[in-house]
Length: 236
Ligand SMILES: [Fe+2]
Image 1 (cartoon, rainbow, N blue to C red):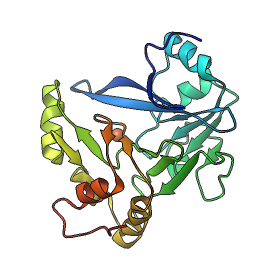
Image 2: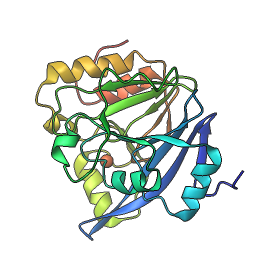
Image 3: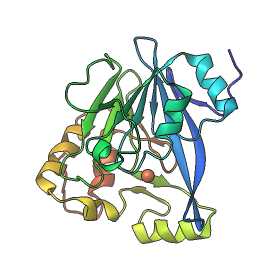
């Protein structure tokens, strides 16, 4: 097996790799891809980052990539290049993303009919937020919640402009949702319904696209999501 330098183990059959992207050449934001080995043996890539030759070798040493997931309407930047690396993999779009990004040749849309992720992954499309349409996943064997912009855990930030942006979002040195989340909600009934389903999952940690991996129960997630709100979401 290739020595893993860019991939880091989260738990059995779950890894992550971090990268950075430039925002308008002004700020640099940290991003994270998650790799899961399904019970079928195939690999599932969540929110792909740029896959260079070294990362390509490391991923290949774990198995064959069968699925690539663009999990919300913002996390699609490296979807096409990941598909080019793994032309036989199915490139999945979050609901609405295929219509929005016609230049990306998605193979399928994540919807209720997805069944071939077997016993490994549960998922929930967060309703009422058509501009974002995030799909959040649970790796059931390790009880790991995998998400993109659903929640952040920014413990520090070296980039000055990003530090200002995190402060503006109210998430600098905090574990919680950004202020922008509520601006993206157009139907809070649907959004709350989805989040309450996620809160019923058995969770021990969260691996998010931005911020440090958080060891966290679903009760701690409930408290973090409700911070600043009056029990907006329900206790599971
Ligand atoms: Fe993001």
